[in-house]
Image 1 (cartoon, rainbow, N blue to C red):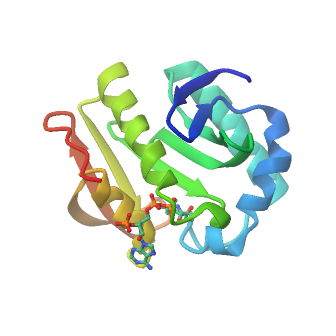
Image 2: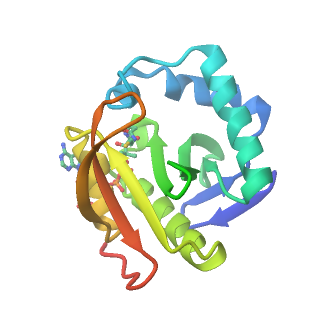
Length: 175
Ligand SMILES: CC(C)(COP(=O)(O)OP(=O)(O)OC[C@H]1O[C@@H](n2cnc3c(N)ncnc32)[C@H](O)[C@@H]1OP(=O)(O)O)[C@@H](O)C(=O)NCCC(=O)NCCS
């Protein structure tokens, strides 16, 4: 398989391929997935292509991105998890999963491995995460990673978000 970057018990996190478009489209056009992403609109084909291209470039440039999430058992692309710049000085951890796989701990499993990668391999001092307040599943993942609530904030569109963070020191996953 193309460039696996991280492996966990049930998942591979790998670089994106342009062909992933066809497998990612059903996820990025699923209203359940998109409910708390930006304004909740599903993504156009052009937006999906841009997302994949951006992550291919991000990984080449910085050695991290929101990696494609591959379910080992089926080899299917089931979402993404990884790191992306939130601002010039902040790196955000993020995750989307196809709903048929929600509730099995997969986002937490992927995100724990991504956090370790960020702290140990990239030597990041801090990792942050944001979510719209009603997105309780995502906020629960942040809590299970041992992240702490820092403040209410707004995203780049001005939408209200909770802002969680974890420092490299004291990395103790709470699962
Ligand atoms: C957020 C998301 C990735 C979580 O994936 P997941 O694989 O279901 O996550 P996990 O199973 O690792 O953990 C989910 C936790 O939320 C809990 N949960 C589920 N529904 C919940 C609810 N309505 N309120 C509070 N917690 C809830 C689960 O019980 C679990 O916690 P637990 O292990 O303590 O029981 C998934 O819901 C998703 O892809 N959502 C759409 C995209 C998205 O919003 N991404 C985040 C943007 S900030």
